[in-house]
Image (cartoon, rainbow over all chains, first blue to last red; front, side, top):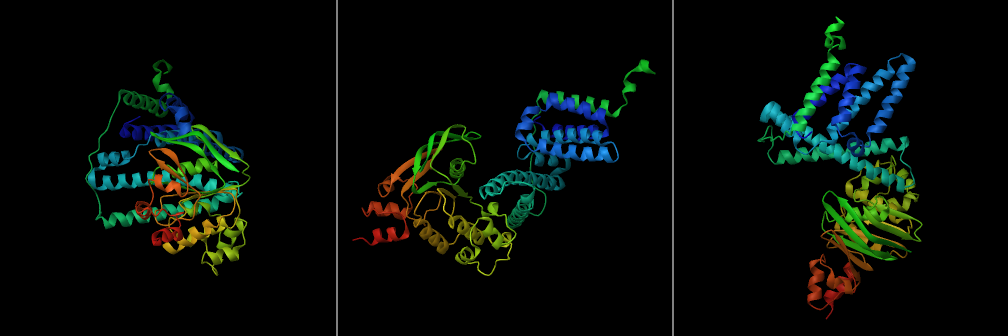
Length: 217
Length: 230
């Protein structure tokens, strides 16, 4: 989906639909299979599988201790898949376009810039984590739970340092708030079809099935 | 002992790096502009990334190490002493050489980038590797530290040492010069004949060659000797 307005709206609607119950999660999963290029998403974002496994672990614990774990696991898995779809479709600058379009050149610009710098940091952290893993393995320390603390510490410190430097640089260049930006969006037919399909999935998830079948009454 | 690149290609979006050649025992300098593909090639040689096509072949290399440009990536210890031990080296001499004696309990991440770079390079160079790859080893170091590192590297007696850098003032004595230009790795040959074909040569080297005072090598002492030659 090229249009960030449709992508963000669709993601919000589908996440909500998936969270409402297992039927919602099922229809959203079908939408994901049809419109989200699943193989491409899984190939681009390898962290999806470990994240789902982690959710599955907590789901099992929940199921054994109080019940409802499987439903929770299914709903959260679908939400993760939708999140991965949004993340892998990201193009530089599109959150700035979205927020400026939504809230204008003052608050919208600031929120868009925060979102953009956040995405930039996320990209850098993914690359940095790979280098950290490689460096630790070269030292004969296979990457595992024991190395998570130093790795996390490095990533967080680096992210804070970069944020600090960016803020100082922007202040030096005279930035206070807001900015001039003209968002441009491209909306192909496929995006509109996927958006309408998502809306249908949302209706199915939120409206009880019996409402669709008049004869049932 | 050697590492060979057989028609190796690496891709990053529309950009491609092509590399072919053999790195034999000795000190190799790979120069190129920022973004030319030096780190990509370093990762390929270290075996940390795979080429899109072609092969990287190692012959009689039992141990290999790469020092990344950003020293933070290497940190695993909660303090300097533990960090040195994690590298399998004696902390006292390494910390002393890095100018960090007495700071054994300091968190490595509390050091400045330059101090951390000195520490990590000290740990890396304290051990013997058949293949040692240094990605931008001079970045974050001041001139005195760069010269100290050059002296240390010039003294490498065994193994293959490959230095990737865009540095143009401080160099150790090297055996061979390579250059990445337009996405292709070029072997400029052994020194001093390589100097005539080295496009990224520092201005001082180019000037000396123009004056027909070809230096024997590119270390500070060699350049000084050539400059003072009558």
